[in-house]
Length: 148
Image 1 (cartoon, rainbow, N blue to C red):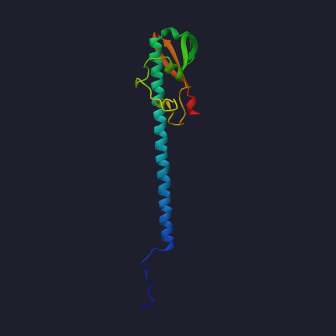
Image 2 (image 1 turned 30 degrees about the vertical axis):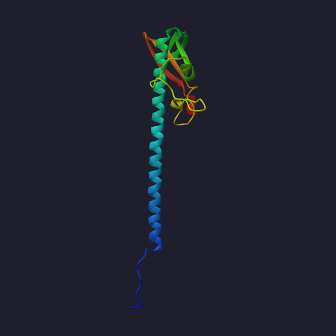
Image 3 (image 1 turned 180 degrees about the vertical axis):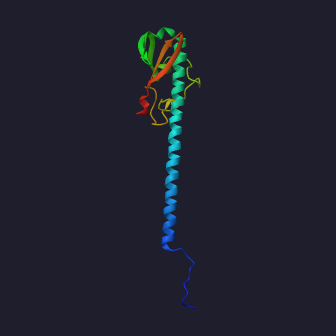
């Protein structure tokens, strides 16, 4: 009776096995959640870029006389039908060209609505090109400096 072993606990190998399995599960879950987060931040930036492009179209429709530059869009040359603007220029132009109608500024004067969620940088110096094609106005982001 005194020689039988007491088997009430786990062995060291069993505990290490459980710890390794848990570590693998946590590792996979962390990177999956992180990938989802990154994809969502990129999507938010794409939506903001779309809003900036739409604001540029509205601005050019209100001010067609600004389209005086020449440019190339998709390998097509447009003579005197283009304009390159920064987001800052769109804001300073006045008018409510952004969907919200007004942009929210923080205490340091930065526009909270125009922060690149991917990098945390301001999008004010990003550039957008507006151009006239077949009597319609289009826009395309040229350079998203806030992504770098």
